[in-house]
Length: 430
Image (cartoon, rainbow, N blue to C red; front, top):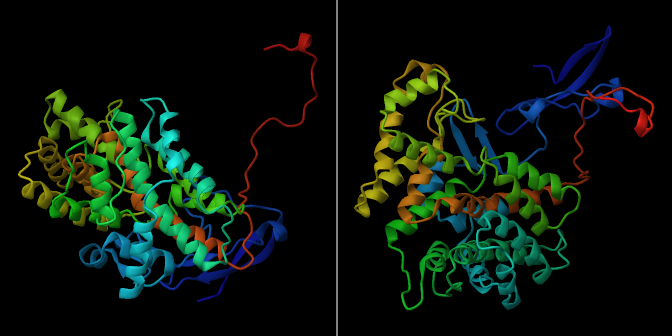
């Protein structure tokens, strides 16, 4: 195979190098295209544009493969904790016992928020969205935490990574407590990562909440499955902001804002809302699917298909089994789960969806798990942000360790007015 691609423009041939990744992914390097030809490429939405070289996460959308640092998601979901997966993503290798214990201690030591930050929560209106609070508080945290973070100082970076990962739980739980008018609950040093978050979420005065092993396991699994997912909207936003030499906190806060959108982090909320609408309407799942196929206004099948996967989302099978197991262990009969099962069965047997490879994705069942745990719907995206924190941190670190890294600066094709002369106000007409 040739290691160059040939592009003909106005009768002239230009050679562009072909780069090959470790999984034999091939891409055309167009970084010198504008200088050589005066042209740029146009790829609306970056669907076919590689913005970076990365060694963190590998996805094969056609084969339904997801790997963190080479490890299949199926193995990590079965055998690793969320904290271990975070260390793998950030530092590139599964931690030794010593490394795992050291990082765990750093998480414990950095779980509590600075005392002065309590007042910040009081500054938000009671109906403020938890994602607004989360992004603002992460930015505020930088002022209290490490003001002079140097990417080349590994000890400072490790402390910042541990502080962010640990405190994001505390901020998330505190934003929820502020939202519902309950006192903020502080972390306990004797609890593990997931258990500590659930304690801060659901403890009320004189009644400490202690999660069951089944609940802790389900949430740990959910966080593992969301820990990273290549160059999605929020992760590429983190890298974009970081490329301007923004600090870790500002970059991650930008990722939170990008995740907030309903087409990204809000997708699992949309699935639950869809199921609730089906239940309230009284129609069958078959009738709902027919409405989707007929493209009736406002009727969409949420939780099916994916921008990257052209096969079954590998996380969907894992999370479906987890949802079944959790509800069985809690003896919960959730009509939403029954509807979800029916809807999945109807859609997977319908040629309309099968031919278009519209299979359930991870969002289809994640909302069911969060409902079963007791997480309110406006906190769903916050849970996504907690899970994605290791991936964001890992991408920030990777970008800052890339030699010769330049600020990200996409180009555009201008489609506006051509040059025109300024007109005095009294002479302007519409």
